[in-house]
Image (cartoon, rainbow, N blue to C red; front, side):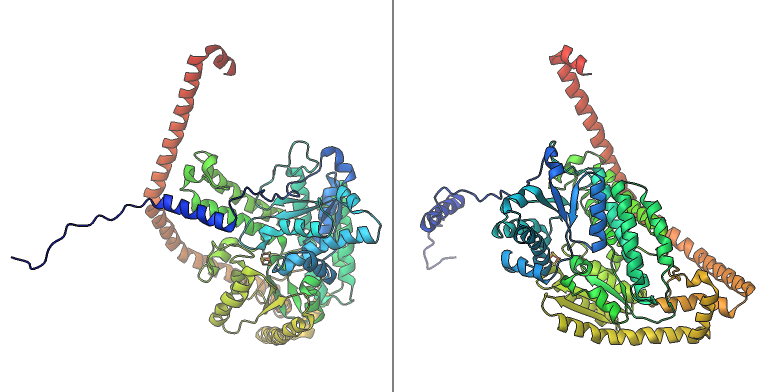
Length: 618
Ligand code: SF4
């Protein structure tokens, strides 16, 4: 075949050294922008400051950030282990102003409140009590929890330092312990702050006892007959526990001695009240000051029972995070050299860590229930973190962290599907990144999927109290109707009247005790109690026994029917996973044997090169 055009030889494309081109471009740009000069890097001078052992007796450690009960008890606990400690009051609106004045722009509300609270305290010391800034910097330090993470919680400590400097307290020491840092965190040999197991045990005791007292308070207060009785009992109990922690006497004995105080509170448990579960951002739902407009007290004054989230549940969540992350990265092994990686943990490191965090979860639960039972908080269920993760997974990725993670979503679903509350109130601080996404976005899908859900997301900005209250009141109206309808339904089903229940309680002190907790069947406490006592009122002892036996028989039968399937399922799953597990074990054993061989070889080499030293070492 002939062609009527000329075929030219292929032209060679010029070969460009891209890296060199980029370097040249960068140099030119640096020169153009004046960035080619040697610059001094900014160094955070207030970071990592601590105090020495010899200074300890002259230093006062300021603490704060949880509820008043927690901060008070932690103060007692840390005093007991040898520190001078002073708790800060709950942050108020003045604290918010201080936070806004000295903090960076665009922070979330909890940052402003907590940072401002510290600045406010120090300013009072200076302007009202006449201390100089130098004296304050020398005599006080602030201890707070820190963590990394995608939300602003990871930046709190930097915010504290910036605001302190701008407020005239340059050099003030802010010390933090990492939530994920375990029971021993480095504070240096000569450090006056020893973050050892004794230190953390004092904090954990304060948290758990604080949780127990708070939970009892929220159970009793809505039903008390004389306003203020519960608060008086709780105050006395706090003092007893504080003294036990400060003097390091038996805290369980102290809690036990508080029980009669609670039992003396007269209550009317036949009142149907809407139960409102408070969820949302951790600090905003926990604080008891202007940070959430005293939300818990407001709900109680409106005739509701507040169901608060305990700090222990937060500890369980952080343990769950550690467990999940370890399971997810366990196959990376030696390659996992990230900060919290498993690379340095040896052959069975991942397995050991999983066992340790699983044990930690169990330990926290046992500890909490021991304290709860001793203090009179009966029948309290801590959330199962695996269940919460599982039910929320479909709507919110379990690996997304920051704020409450998937917990907020899981709790709303649980409240609806397990009838845990009539209404769910989600507190979302102004400027909160994770909470805005969850409350405004994901929760809308949940409320669509579960019609009838009473879900009230509210934003706290510090200055919208009236709007905030009015929004809550609107939802509360629906919740009150739901609580009343539920109670009346139970009475009708059981063929009872409220007067009959009251008469029964008058004659039966065990059920009438303010600490008595009826088994959970309904959202409302009064409905649960009505369902529990109904059989005692309408049936004879023999009829109740017969009913109980038939329920037990039915449950055993159901279990027997389900069990073979469950066993088959477990065996199937084990069989499916067997090759992978066997392979992993093989690799572990191989790696372990090689490690041993290498160590033996190294020892032999050492001995060959210097037999005297090696023998002595052995
Ligand atoms: S969860 Fe929200 S409110 Fe809380 S620290 Fe993070 S960004 Fe701020």
